[in-house]
Image (cartoon, rainbow, N blue to C red; front, side, top):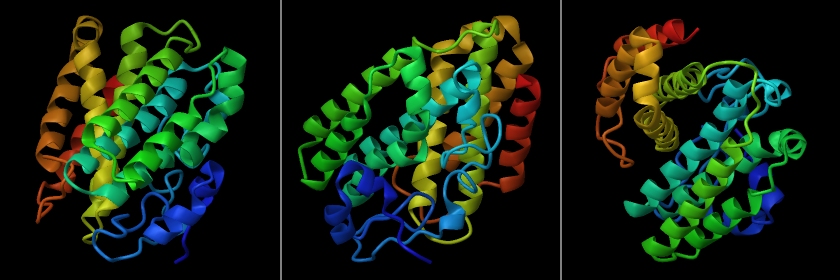
Length: 277
């Protein structure tokens, strides 16, 4: 096991976060000073290899995104943005329940996990660099800022992600096809992280999965009618999967027991992936 600090080095936060006992995604819970346990990461469990599998088109950057396809495939592009959104949703909600160090970690993770690899794509599509917003949010969480201030940092990131989404490439796929593909990817990641979280008592895999679930839910709320109109089977399978995931991930605070049947979750995710293909 070794501590992975690439995220923090990229943001100029390595020293502060090392002191807080934080590490990369998919390792042990990054609760640092709250629980007195330094987080560690098995680099084989980084997002591209274990966090949600190889979603969005196969192996790519550390977020499992095939970034080489992101400039032409709107599902891959949108999945990259969704991975970033999942982390900041998890960060905001973790901060709200007092997981300060874990929140700081989650706010910063998207930079090394996906956004650095997406830089050439963003440049090609005319998306302004918004990585500093993640650093600012992480620093605010580390500093113990008010929930209102952290929420404002979150809102700024979401606004930047929505603006970036407007620059998505167009390969002729319908709006419902693109939305369904991105949601399917997030569901698959949430299910995979629940399996990982169930292997032990680590907080961070659970928090990762919670973020993916909430992002899938948000995207589905925005596109439900369109998906239903074009692909009722996909709509219904997404709804079923999200209902199961809402039980698996009731809040950003990990339950004492993770007792939702993995087989049911995996089956629901497979059904969504099949209908979305």
